Length: 87
Image (cartoon, rainbow, N blue to C red):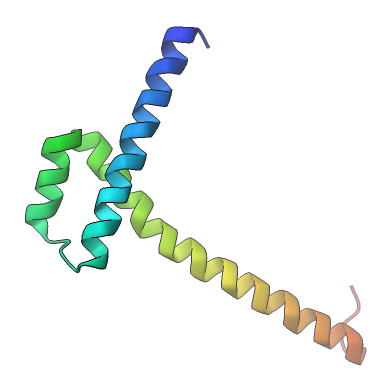
């Protein structure tokens, strides 16, 4: 990848991060209605706004999955100690 493309990619990533941070602030204040999303699209552009929205939505689900995986690993460890599971 040449330098120009990598600079454009970094710039795009910065915009997505900024938009996601703005969306998180609105979400914390419970202001994530259509009006706020339209403001986000107007300030950052539609593709960036959609990317940020999906990123914020997926983040919560990833945290839940991570917690579930940790809980599952602990349950398997307990079963190993009891000798009920052999892996």
